[in-house]
Image 1 (spheres, rainbow, N blue to C red):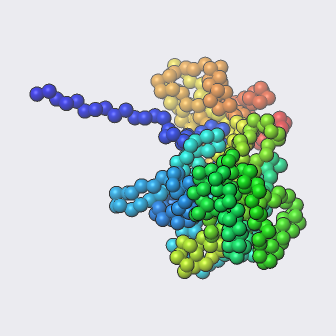
Image 2 (cartoon, one colour):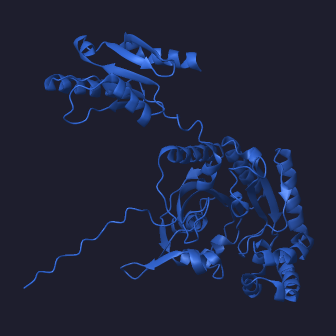
Image 3 (cartoon, one colour):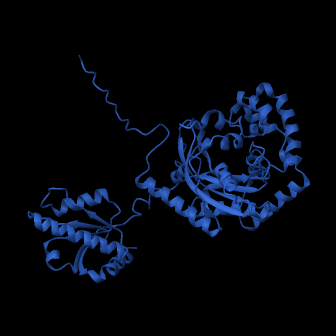
Length: 458
């Protein structure tokens, strides 16, 4: 009887479409953005929070709007083995609001959180947009005061300044008003758009009966001319909403934060109200090669969502909130590689081996001891250029070539050979790759010697 051979499964080595590996300069820039975000959050009194990547599907289906493209096309939703309907988070705010409720923090307000991590949307990958994308964001729960809006926008501006991107972005600002303002405007807008229904895009016609405000944010060319003629929400603001917005603008001006009013900047969900804002990348000029393109120009967006917690709690808890989020992937695209390529400048230890196995082993041991001392006592980043297993003598010039190729940011190379081993390890022979000089100094003064050379070349 012929035995059936098991089918060998080939492991797919490509990443999933719309997802990618991060390493090298890209990883260094990612860490830089996160570090800047953390430092700015600390300045403004925000605390770190981490929520699960997986949430119950209802967390997002209720909060993102059932007619939205995200719900209809983009969520990674599935049933687990227990039959629970789960969703991989597409954004951070809903999870933060859920955490506020499930951890009974609504009696400890205000709560000011910041976070960064992966989000997931099944959309068409393009420049600056991935199916797994990284976001950094802040959420401020517990204050309706207009000063909290100003502080949150100021924090976003400071974050972009620290990244040296502020002079390349433009703050777009609008107000959605309170519920009274939006109700008045919605009826007028619906009437106007209905009269132009035959010229609207298919998506906008669908939204006309469910969420007409979202049509104002449509990118479809068929909608552009109609939206341009539509009534302005600012004409239907209540006196309280108008006064609040004027206070916001006055305070931003007092902080030196310039802005552009954009009446088409909206949020289609009912729990959003009053302040909405976006920082849009403009670049140095229209031909700037770093440009993210017209569809991807927003690098940071935020707004006030006073009705979100009330929606999630079924009306039991009313907690105001405001926040913003920025796409880390897009921000790293705007940061120049220069400066990150050599941001890690370790000392490299090279062992000059011989045709003597016992000697080479003692040399390896001394390299480990020296690297440990550099790292723990002198706090010097150190890399050992380990010899290949079984290799005996190695030429110094080839070892140096390998260092320059694999560690382009390396500044100093420490040589360990027979002389250094027989001298008891008290003398360090090193080469300064930047100044192309070589020196031998006592181990006790190696840190000051490195520092002196770095200052000379600065």
